[in-house]
Structure formats: structure tokens, C-alpha cells
Length: 111
Image (cartoon, rainbow, N blue to C red):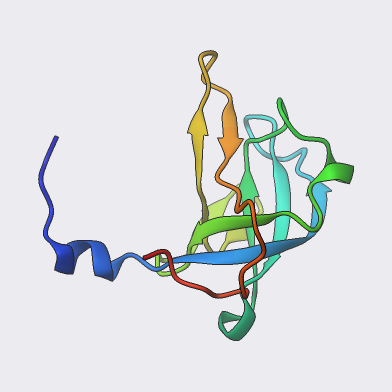
């Protein structure tokens, strides 16, 4: 594991956002959803997330998650991802979202 400095950590814009919309993403190579997330003053951004094993489309709207909003955009199939959804792999390698258990303002930075 490489050690980073506090300045390195401060460069990562890990921000709170609320999931607004979830759509299927059949064009993705691995099962995924398209998410629209409200990051408050940083706007509404879209991303894809391979979270179909643990979450249905219906249960995701309203959840607050952590996203990295200062990565460059990335094209995934015919879709442009504007932020990185964060999560952890379970024992099977399936992604569990990094969720916020009490409401905070959208756009809040992880400190």
C-alpha cells in the first residue's frame, strides 16, 4: 500500500449526492444501472454503477451516496459517466454502495 499525504487526500472531491433517477443500462458489458444524482451546488450528474445484485431500481431513489466528482468524464458503451460511484465489494465481489446513514446537504465533502 502506498502512503499518501493529506494534500493528496484533499484533492479527491468525495461529495454527498442524492440519487434522483435510476434506469436500466442494457448496453453495458456487465449488468449496471444509469444513475442521476443531485450533488447540490455541483449539479446533477450521471454515472453508471454495477450494483444490480444488491439493489433494485425502485429502492435507490432518495438514497444519499458518496461520489468522486473530480475525475474526468468516462465513456461507458454509449453513455458518458460524469462521476465515480463509490462502494465496496462483498465476499462475492458484488458492489455494496457507500451510503450516508443520516441526511447531509448534497455536495457536502467527506472530511
